[in-house]
Length: 287
Picture 1 (cartoon, rainbow, N blue to C red):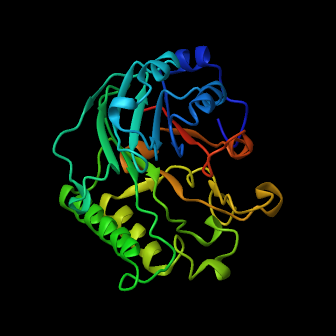
Picture 2 (picture 1 turned 60 degrees about the vertical axis):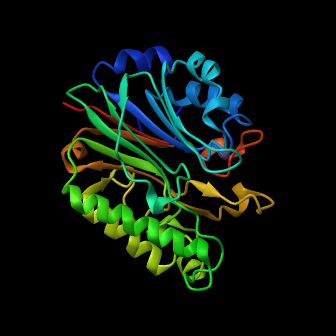
Picture 3 (picture 1 turned 30 degrees about the horizontal axis):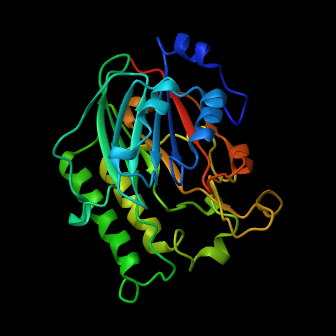
């Protein structure tokens, strides 16, 4: 599994799930508005676990029956009206984690953790939606940017206190494109929120603290360009191709050898009523 191939059918995925699992992340930008697109995603990628961000839906209004009908009997969500919100949909059983931090003491539904019942033993899975940070890259002038840096600082301290990760996957919309080849123009975006040096270093510090491995760049090493987000402001997103890689999947070092493939579903940006983000998936064969 690599690139953007057609992907396996759900039946094939269930067969391969005995030896491997497919874990995907997507900033859906409203789960109720884009519910029909989830059916397309499942047909294309056949994920065993799908983590969503920006569900924009309080828990009591989450369309659980429709999500379960797509083949996900196990669902956890942390949502609120109108913005933010995360959810985990799974074919595999899981246990919700208790006691994870309330980041920046805001209760704003940006993180959800579970213990997956995975082949070879439990896998700790964390779904994050990192604050976007507004438009001005100055924490003194922009409270949204200050919140973003505070969130990353707390996440780094949390990871450092726990020590090097074991059998763990951390993923989601991190709202930072860390590498020069993760943006369409490094020089022109150095002062643009999502690619500023202070954000890039903050994300790198979080990654180092958990000793996590970049699962997508494992297969698509620099300097190859790779994007997961294209602005709604572009008249023709595909022609201009001014993208950024804001969506990430990290795995603990002990799972790096279990990586079998990745997909960035670029064509999803062209779906009707598309999100500005596209789904990202990796396949793991943990032992």
